[in-house]
Image (cartoon, rainbow, N blue to C red; front, top):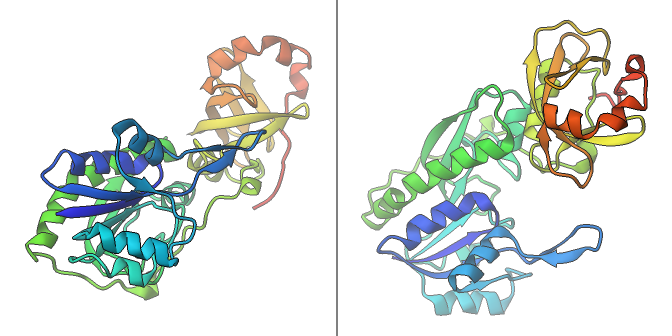
Length: 319
């Protein structure tokens, strides 16, 4: 098959590699335009664009998918199948109906749950025990198309969005070639989604990433891990921001929301409104993340400036 692949982030690279290493042909790759990043707002390419440049693959970064120019590019490509995997935009109907065998979407949840932009993160934040990958027929609605097949993926106790995305990438790359073969052989039984059971995973906003220590410990742990690696949860210590990348639930009873119960070279425990949360990885702004022990040793002067009895993290907001 001649395939057009539409994707942008890291999670879709292994799937693309599987197709490239098969008998199928990648005729064209769509990826999102470069985005401004950092204080200087310099335009930086996404992971798929970088991969294309490194491997001399044909790609386009259309700003407007509804333009006649983009439609003509698709027609000239003459593809058999369009595969969309975390591309970042909704593909118009007059585009996704062009390929001979139609178009499919690889979505990182068990549909109809968690339709939308952030299914991996929201599943962890909501305390789900499993999620998965769904291959579905592309439709005009947001992740509403008929399901080809779904594959469950377990969410471990200390799972972060980053580690879960890696597991999702392995599952999708493992199953993509069989899915393509089944489509080519017309060996697909589509299952309509039960739209009454649909839920939505809205994009994470930076103003959601401030930790509310007056929540229950399990909610805080899930929030921290769900926001890792991006946009990353944070709190403040003596008016300085501290980024929190990974946490686990601890049975130690809290002595008050945001109260540091223990901070040593081995452990950082912070109270919630019931139990406590053990922080496993953290960083200061602009610095790399590190285990608690390394963070403590590298920031000793910072912490010695304040009496231990005043080591509290404020209750920043309620949710």
